[in-house]
Each structure stands twice: as structure tokens, then as C-alpha cells.
Length: 528
Image (tube, rainbow, N blue to C red; front, side, top):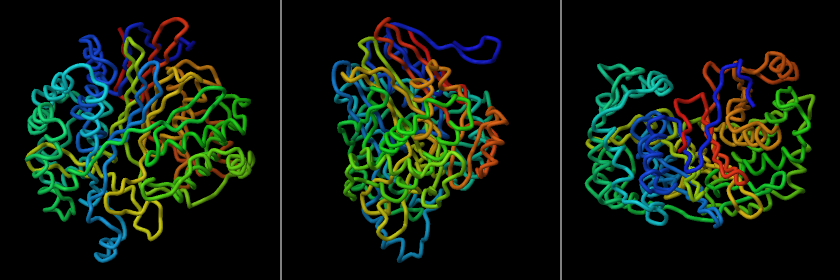
């Protein structure tokens, strides 16, 4: 129970349905869909579609998504809606053109958007109400406008320079050459027209249409290698989740090219090192989390990639022997130094969670990678393209080296926890680019090990080791920060916050849904 004399949020409780997203407009839309008779899948797609309009800095139909769907009584299913590289985008092309890295605003950073294909595919398999109704509110917000929320306005201001570089983006996303600020109303009528086409024609409307031609023409004019055939060849992958046990519970993640395996490795190390014995607000806890992050990221950045191009046995990385070997690198009195775990980029995203009255649950994440993606907007459709291709390496023999129709190693990961009978207990996720694996680990520990409520677990101060620095929030106790500094951590105090998150707990004993939404973002949990 939180201390009422301190600022904070109460957990949200309901019995018929619960949603938690990072924007109030999408949370309300998801509830409306549930109350109309839609299920968790309908509501998740509707909420994501709304956020693709009202949170253009972090997500959009020009981006990717992943999801874990748990239909009550059935094993969870992983959904991979990440996009492929163009067929012509092989390593030799970059060598021949003396391109040593993929720039954040380069057309080569634009992989084929996978989100719309995944939405339509998920709806076809699991949806209950008409697809037009599912995305109608997204079209309405795009056509008639919406007020820009606080956190979104900050991201908009931070990306003002990027948006000025592209004529289409400058015209659409800037107001008199300035970013839209808190409380101003923004419209994207070309996107509204695009969403209307998608509502009728679904996958064909985005991947085999005049919209496709416009996207390809836009990218080709800037030097992109994209073709209509590339869009036609985009597919959504449905698979089993990958799992590992933690304190008798099952953690479910999406398979590679999602970094879900990193979460499972981190939690296996957490259990092996018995971090539970340390106080949640202790130097030891934050130090060990930092060390686990660096060690697991070293593996992620040197071994993992698209499994269609790499032979990776997941069980090998979760074996007791392997996890023990990783734990042997951890020392309480000094830091583990490595540059092998340095990442190519540190992007942003949105995450949402939905549980309906039948206890079907969806853990869902959608992203355009960095703030406002590539900064490239299509000529006529209002689509802002992601820049997920910056996660590729341009290195011979690297498992994540770019190749034709290859998926890059991703950062976005939804999470789900079940009991041994595969009944969902927690649907959760954490935003914040490369922070996501350690963020999930941090949240799971808060809830499972330290018995914090869903909302308390999200609120708790954060730290994050990345590229030689330990990023910490200002809310972290200075005594802890000084101890971390004294043993060698290079401390970087974050001006804003680290990541964000949402979580829903299914209390099966009492028949209650408990939702939480991170105060670091604009959103909210709401139930009925």
C-alpha cells in the first residue's frame, strides 16, 4: 500500500475489463471497444491505432509491432509484426557506396512497416467486431484533431530540427516551423484518408495499393531501395512464446528478432544471484541489475539476430551451466567493463495492455523507433516512416548485419506472466528503447520479489547501464548513487525519466483486474 502523504497514483480496479496505455485517448477508446462487445484483441488494435495518430513521436502506421495474445484457457501466442529490409538492401550495396553506417534520417533506415499487416492479421484470427469500427476513432482523431499531451509535446520539441529536414514532415508536423506544443490541436488529414482506405481494404489497402506506390515513390526519390514487391512480401509471424520459470511462475516472451530472450536470461541471472535478499532500494540491487544488463547486452549485440539468418538454440542460453557462467562475471565490489555490448541506437516506443471480461489478454507494443522515426513523411498519405534499420550492423559476418528481407534485431518487447497452467496473471511491458529488457526485469522483481503493487512497481526509481554509463533517475537516493559511483560506475543523471510502462494483474482468486500506468508518460489505466 502506497504512503498517502507522498505523491503517487492508486491502482485501478475493475471486474469487467481493464486497459492501460500511455495516452488517455487510447485508453478511453479501448474501453469503448470492450463495452461495445469487442474483445481484448479488438481493443488493443483500436488503442494502438489511436496512439499511432495522437503519439506521432513514438508510434505510427509507418512502424512495427509485437504482441503476446493469451486467449483464456489456451497457450499464449507471440505475434511478430516487425518489418523486413528491402530486397536490394544487402551489405554489398553499402560497401559499394562507401556507406559505413545507417543514419537516423536516411531512407536506408526505413524498413518495411509491419504494424498494419499485424493488426489486420491479428484481427482476422481473433477479432470479434468489424475492423472498420476498430480503427474508426483513429481516423476521427486524425481528421478532426486532438490536443497534444504533455510528454508528447516534449518529444515534439526535441525533434523539431529533425522534422525541418524533410519538406513533407515540415509541412505536416510543424506549425509555422515550430513543434506543436502542449494543448495545441493537431490534425493529420492525409493520414485520416489513409486509415479510411485501410479500414476497408485492410492489408491490401496498405501493401498493394496507391498508398504503397506513394510510399515507394517517396522513399525512392530520397535514394531508398524499396519496391512495391518488398511491401507485398511483408508477413506477420505467429508462433509459440518462449518461456522460462521464475519463482515458480512462467515468463512469456516473443521469439527473436525480438530481444525477449534477453529478459529470460536476465531473470535467470536474477534468480541465480538471489537479488531478492537485498532491499529493493539498495546499492546492491541497482549494482547487480547494472552488471546483469551489461553482460546480457554483450551477448545480445554479438550473437543475436533474425533467426531466419542465424542458427540459435534458445535452450543453450537458458541452461543452468550457461547462466552460471554469466553470473561468475558479476562482482559486488567492482564493475564489469565491456564495449561488446554497446548498441547502435536507443529508440522510443509505446506499450499498452488489455484484459477483457473473458480474461483474454493482449500485451502489445508498437513503435517507429526513434522520436518521429526517420523524420521522412510520404508525399500524399500522411505516413511517417520508422527508422528501425538503424539497428542493423554493417559488418561482415555479424548476426545482425543487414541483408535482403532480413528483420533487424529489435528493441520492443511485450511481456506476459502465467501460472504453470498457462493462466495469465500479469500482462505488462516497459517502454524506453534499449531499457526495455532491464525495465521488464526491474518491474518483475518489484512485483514478484518485493511484493509491490502493480502501480508501485511501475513508480519505483530506475537505473540503466548503457554504452559505458549508468543512467539514473533523479528520484534515486543520492546515497545509492554515490556508492555506485565509488566502485566505478560512470553516472549520468537523466534530465527527464527512464522509460515508461503499463501492467495489468489478473487476481483470479477475487475476480478482480488491477491496472497500473506509469506516471512518466501521459497515459492512464482505466477499467469498468
